[in-house]
Image 1: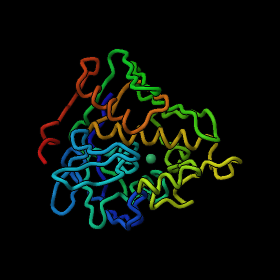
Image 2 (image 1 turned 180 degrees about the vertical axis):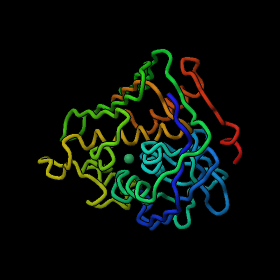
Image 3 (image 1 turned 45 degrees about the vertical axis):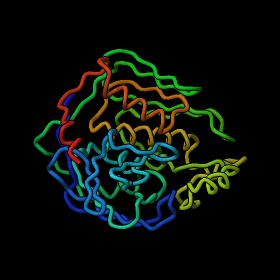
Length: 279
Ligand code: ZN
């Protein structure tokens, strides 16, 4: 399987509240012909790569020299789903990516509307060659060879129960539109922890007894699948293989990336890690 590099045709701006900080954030996504996604804040360049992940609690945050950019996963998922591997994200205001619709729909639609353009370089590909399993505690991820992309998330959600969602290399409405969720009884807890300050019904799905807020019956599972895809995008390439995540989270996704980058069970093609290490 081979993917050519891809970027967007023109600059797009996004402005809105950040889910965790509650601050208005403003970003601009620019086209780039250089392989890799790079974030810029206050003149500092932070590569969208595993090595620059500084937090995985409730969101995936990138950072360098004390400067951090929070909640990059939904934007990264939009890049991954559209095959965009080259772009520059300028964080003009705030320190978090706007939560927008709570999923990746706003980003995906904006990128599709502005148009995509192919680049001459080959994308980085991580091909799973042998089965492996990572099981930290209670949750786990199983990975095995597969000709294509087949990623599944399964979880047991408060009030909702057991749900699963699968990505088969195709963009689905349920996937990009699945919102961030929280257990309503957990909102106070989230606020106390200073997470979720920008959470409103429009971008956050409250898990309640009667499930009236669910747009899709498996919405929370789709959202966790979206998080997984956004987190995998921080490998700096695509994954060819079958991934099954049971009750995974950003922390487990971080361990998965670490394994993929280091393990001999994964074949790496067209790596450009040097560029990612130049911050
Ligand atoms: Zn998320």
